[in-house]
Each structure stands twice: as structure tokens, then as C-alpha cells.
Image (cartoon, rainbow, N blue to C red; front, side, top):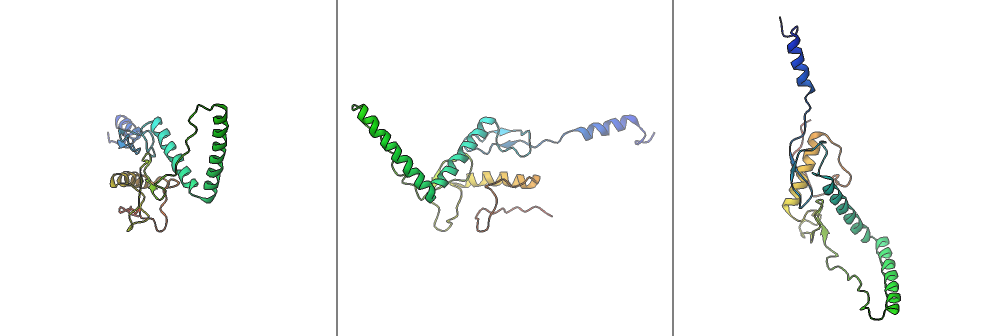
Length: 178
């Protein structure tokens, strides 16, 4: 009997074709976690739901920081502070023993830039020779680069916010063959 006619051989081939290829172990992208995990989906960047929530919180923090630097954001923040001062005065008049409200002082790092790695809240002064610097350290840069290269290799679409734009200093050294 030839292998094509052998029913046992056919069953073995079918079993092999059914085997699901799973992604390899990888490291969680969130700064501070960095634990190893086996993803359920090739596009997963984080090891668990708590890490995904922390990354979403970081993303909101970064967007809020960017919005507050715009003219509209500064105006909105001034109005918010004004309303808070009025509430504090009213509270102070009703309870005179209170020490009063302490306002938020202006941050001394207003010129500083937040790191682009999820979960990294460190702000840094960009170097004069590279004003478009996005990462606080080489470790953060390498962690995000590793994820972006893997996603490109798997053929996954680029995520919003991480698209390479003209003039961006974050350049891939590895290019896939076409």
C-alpha cells in the first residue's frame, strides 16, 4: 500500500494539520510588570487584564497631559481651578478651623516630555541633539521596538498612536523582505 492509500497515514496527516500554531512566550510591555506569558492572541501586548487596565490608565494620563498643553486645555483648567477656589472659600467660611484648600502648584517639568512606553510615567528633558526623543531610557525604547517589530513580522496592522510619521526619530532597523 502506498502512503496515499494508507488510511492510517491519512489520519496522521490530518492530525498534524489540525495542530494550532501558537505564539511564543513573550514579555509584558507594561513597565513594572515585564513578566513572561504565552498570549492567546498574536496581537496581545499585556499579560493580564490588570495590566491592560493599567496601560489604558497610562494612555488616558498621556492624552490628558497632551490636551492640557493646548490653549483650550489650559483655559478649561483655569476655569476648573477658579471653581475649586470658590468652593474652598465657601468651605472655609462655613468651617473656620480648617486650614483651607491647597491649590495645585504649577509643575516644574512643564517642558519635560513623558515616555512613550505604556506604564512609564517618567518625564524627561529631551536632549538638545535629539529634540524628538520619545523614550526616557534605552530599555523603554527597546521594549516598544521589540513589540512593534513582532507585530510587523506577524503582519498585524499598526496601532493608532504608534504609526511612524515623517521626522520621527523612532526608526526600525529591521525591514521585512518583500
